[in-house]
Length: 273
Image (tube, rainbow, N blue to C red; front, side, top):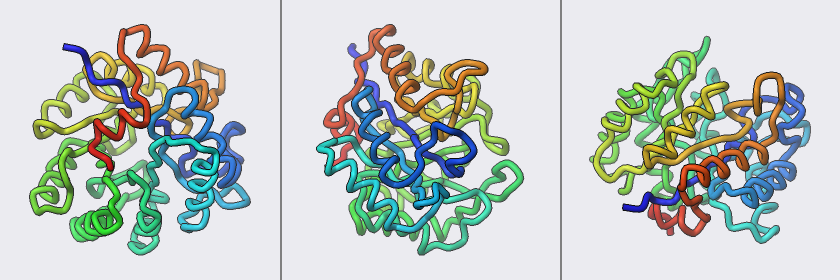
């Protein structure tokens, strides 16, 4: 049986300042430009953290709007996926985190539990997750359920059973974060075996784990995330661009005989629209 086309999710910006790495986007319009660029290279989803005019990470809705407008004004139909988290240490302002959802992107991140994240506590309480799910339903946004360890699968499933997240569930396994599950083949198989039937899954490996995890996803029939949010290097000692990372992943899928999904195919797979 032919495998489902591979959804490439490009996480192009992340939560760090433009000053920490020269190839990160500089402002909202630069994010939009990079989104169009990675879509041309094979990404069907682009995951966006907003940057203000100084290149600093921000939760202000207007900067998300400007990035989205750039993409749509360019005639690009890539699926836009906005973050609902702005740092691992400042996550108690619920209304700020709900802000990007009010723009009605097709997808938005839904971090499925509280955890240690490096030296910080990343707070996603059950009450917050219920309210975020309700807000996503109100604005017709599909949650990209970000799973950092096995227990978070159960958190999301319980909220789905309450009728607050619609099928098919879409889970993104984020592996290799300090405080989360390790980026290993054994862990990925365990997570895939732990999700409900019919769940769409993808994987994001952090740092040097990005490429091995993406290769496993291609072979296992899942989907894959790449981009500078998770990894800055094309190879040891050589900084990457977002386009280079997407092109490499699309090329790897072709090598393995896996079709790369268009945005329209991604929407069909995820049940969007």
